[in-house]
Figure 1 (cartoon, rainbow, N blue to C red):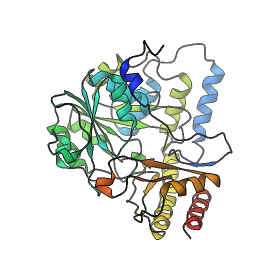
Figure 2: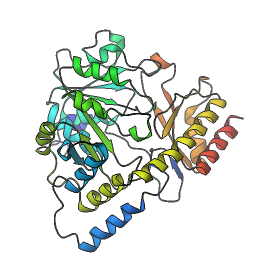
Figure 3: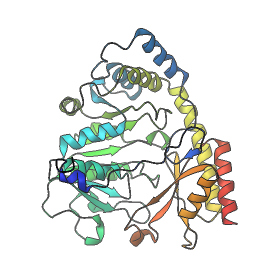
Amino acid sequence: MSDYIRRNILDMPGYVPGEQPKKGEAVKMNTNENPYRASESVYDAIRRVADEGLSRYPNAVGEAFREAASRVYGLPADWFLCGNGSDDILTILTRAFVPEGGLLRLAYPSYILYRSLAQIQGAASEEVLFNADWSLPGYFGAPPEPESAFHLRPVPGTKLGLVYLPVPNSPSGTVIPKEQILAFAESLPCPLLIDEAYADFADGNCIDLVRKSSKIMISRTLSKAYSLAGLRFGFLIARPETVTELIKVKDSYNCDALSIAAAAAAIGDQAWRAENRRKILATRAVLTQRMRALGFTVPDSQTNFTWNVHPDKSVSHKAIYEYLKAHGYLVRYMVYPGWEKVAGRDDGLRITVGTDGQTEECLDLIEKFLS
């Protein structure tokens, strides 16, 4: 069959998600899942839909969720596009905006799936390096010039179709100021997607920018702040004329009846979200303080994880990851080739905030390893 599969698919390595052990085999602090159970309103909604039966197709655009989101965010319902996780939203956008042979721009290091989506589309990715302090150079919003600006540089003259900008970013947990993002959008020859997968844990968000610029779109997920990673539901916030065109690109019924009902219930329970956020932020502060006390450089995180790099190169991040895994704790060991020319090291440990007990035990293990 390899003789028939498209060459760009054969050539690409494919996105590799974080390890997913069997339940009970390890404490998962590696894929930015929420350690707490979702709102009980979610389970009630799922039971109601299941009791009614699943023999009919769901509403094709997830109208129940759009109406619930409209109430929460103060935007008309037609400003929302539902997806099977925010990765589905990213796929829809890449298919709609990036031509085959075109170009997708992203910051580096960031979410590596962006690059995979470009490869699937038969497009190139232009990867502009963050500065060492995780700020972005001004030329991110315009055609970059210096060779040192790139991790990956495409063939000159390739048409730029879309720009992905995660705010907050992964793995760093950092944000870009809104005024700079708006300036980026105004200087770009294409749309800008702000990936706000972790915005519920941040001090602010960019939703008002969608009103200010027709080029700006925002993607969100319910996997993180609503404890619904296993459900798979995400959404886009964009101008209604954009959403209308994107509906043509999505799968006919890309969200099932259970996920639509559960997502509507989840986003409707903002009291649960606020309390969950409070717990995550409190534990994040402990995680940050203790890792810094152990000698790690840890940027101020606006997410439910921290990025941890030890400045002493004799301290092996990979060895720490393997030690934790052997003791039943999974964190994410990540390597970003080329990043060492900016930051001194190309790897680090991304640690998801767990419960207080999980986080303390993980930190104790790291301290024991270093002692």
